[in-house]
Image 1 (cartoon, one colour):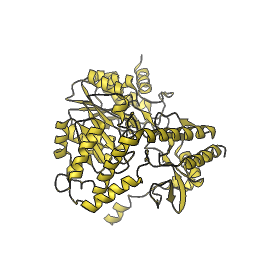
Image 2 (cartoon, chains in turn red, blue):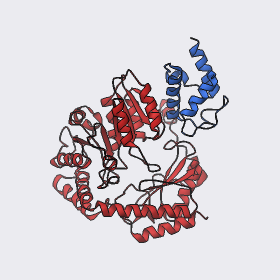
Image 3 (cartoon, helix red, strand yellow):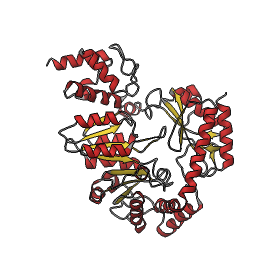
Image 4 (cartoon, chains in turn orange, red):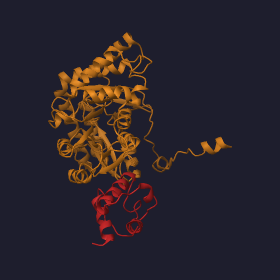
Length: 391
Length: 77
């Protein structure tokens, strides 16, 4: 009976999918990220992946991954601190550090683990973490796990942030945590000003650049390059599964801190190391960004603009973004699902966001057109979006 | 400014949308306050009234007037 009581607590509320006749989650994807995506047996235009530069299925990246598998096998079956720290892993740490312009880097199995493990390793009950109200779940959960005082500030609101900093005294250390690009609608943090406020009030900035690395900056180095921040003294995290087109997460910063974390961050120490195929794929992507970023970014920006204008022409309410993200303001969760469903039925795969990923009643449907898509595919998507809004 | 007015102003200053707020406003249903908003509101009230608030003490508040009642009890201690 006790087992029945336990398991009966776990029920899935599927009412939204029932009401709208559509469940956008856990769709069966039957192809890689080529020009079109096979989903549930249908070929769809993929405006849902974070494959910004379109390198996930690039032949050079695939080749590097295959060669790594041939040399090292599928996995090292060990944590980095034990048998998982292959020469490729070490070399990539150095390349990533150089790429973002920071002293040292550690690579984790995901950015969720990076953000989740970071704060309990660096903060405790005597500390204060001030955090943008809209940051990703991985940061919120990681911050909560640290057991310190938490004060959210209004989204990208420097006045509110400074007010909190002014009033916060008596803490061992104050951290200010934000994201470079807020992924549901593409807003960009005023990070240079945040760094300046941190300097003024002796706080330590922490930035998650998951949607900025490989996208922002004149050569794709991310938020620090974009904002012209030199000699950054804070902590930097990023996903390696978006523009960098593999999987994993990174934490970069001052050498002393990273060396400490490599022994005291359990999310790294007790996790099997990122597999050779992913490590080699990332290395290949960094090489491609070095030589082709200008071209890829130009295409990405052009596609974003075409999709944006098509959405407006179709009568959608769209967030004005400064990044390659287009975001429809869809309101209620029901409407968010319905728009996603209609787009799906018209052959376009998008990403819906409902609470708790966004505030209640502020649903978003996100569209990202990766640089791998052909001009014909973008034209096809644009025609559908223009028509869709009139339905 | 009365305590009620100070509470309402603090709530307005600490919510993204600066909605219409009255004593009868329900935090969840009317003001769409989620767990992070609640954290932000309580911190704002700490600053406004120069007190420390334990989250669990305010876990049950459902309306703005509930907050006022809690604060009055707290400030009269």
